[in-house]
Each structure stands twice: as C-alpha cells, then as structure tokens.
Length: 221
Image (cartoon, rainbow, N blue to C red; front, side, top):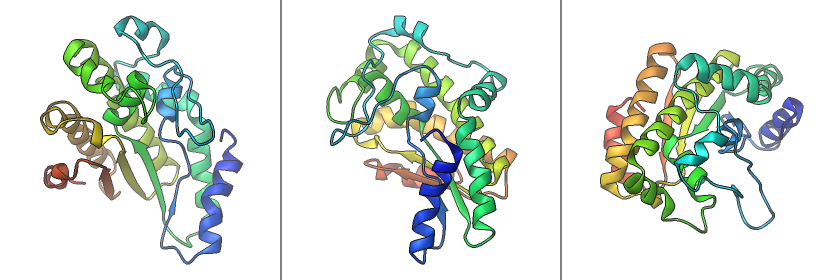
C-alpha cells in the first residue's frame, strides 16, 4: 500500500471492529529493502518475494546503501514518506482511543530476504553470505541498521507510541551467527532508540530465536 489513506484504513479496521488495546501500523516488513532499490512482490499464496535477490556483492551497485545516519534519514524521508505520513493520519483518526504501535523488520530479516529472495526457497543463502562474503555482509547489515533506526525514529516523530522490531527470520540463522551478526545490531538499535526516545517502549519478536530473549531484554527491549 502506497497511499497513506489506504495504510491508515487497513490499520484502523480491526480497531473499529474489535475491542483491541492497541493499533499496529499495517506495513510490509520489506519496505526498507524496497526503499534501498530491490523490487518486492507479493504473489498470491507464495508470501513475500524478492524476485531478483542479491547474487553477490557486485549487486550492491543496484542499491542505495547509506553509510551515515543522515543518508539513512534521507532514504526514509524520500522513499518511505507514505508510511510516515500514514502514522500521523492514524494517530489523528485514533484520537486517543488506543495507542499506536509502529514497527520495522530487523536487519537480519531484511538481509535474509535481500540475498535469498523468499522464506520458502534459498533458505541457506543468508548464512552462506555471512561465511563467503563477510565484509560485504557486514556492510549491508550496517546500512540496514542505520535505516531501521531512522525509520523507527521518524515513526515516533509522526506519532507512534510504542515500537516493535520484528526478527521474522530467526529460524534461518544459527545461534552463534545470530549472536555474532544479528544481536549486535539489535543492541545498537535499542541503544539509539532509547537515547532519542526514552519514553517510547521498545518490543521485539525474535521468531525462531527465543534463546536470544534474555540478551534482548538486557538490551532494553
């Protein structure tokens, strides 16, 4: 959904229909991957698909990869404005009825889709990249973390009252690799968000990586 009014409407419908205690922003987990330059599709019955995932570090030429928080903020402002505008619209429509939860996919989840393309095939590609392209993997994860922070921060500035970081692909990374490559970025996201918005609760859902919950709790999620 690219129209803020459509995002707001789909977010608000469950709140109108059911006695929920919060609204959660309706937005795809791969909007950041799309904003960085990859096409994302949702064919019926197949889930989310990146039809042309990154085959090697040479494919970074296809992307816009921020290296500073200023560059990352510009990506969000220029390419994800429809989501940020929707947050403000939703808050106005809610008019205090329930709080609004904003969210973003975590860096590893974005990385997984960007190099593998799907949750159903190429499931080994993420860890293969970590092993075969360590420097490029670190660069991509760093850029993703920068954008996630700015995306979440701009959601708060637009009106989100709680935030969730969604690690949807925790099932497709080993515990040692999670601790080495995913968890450090999760910690840095929490540190930055608590520094900028200390009043905003920060939640996390590490699907398939429940072993990380104690460390994530310690990181202030």
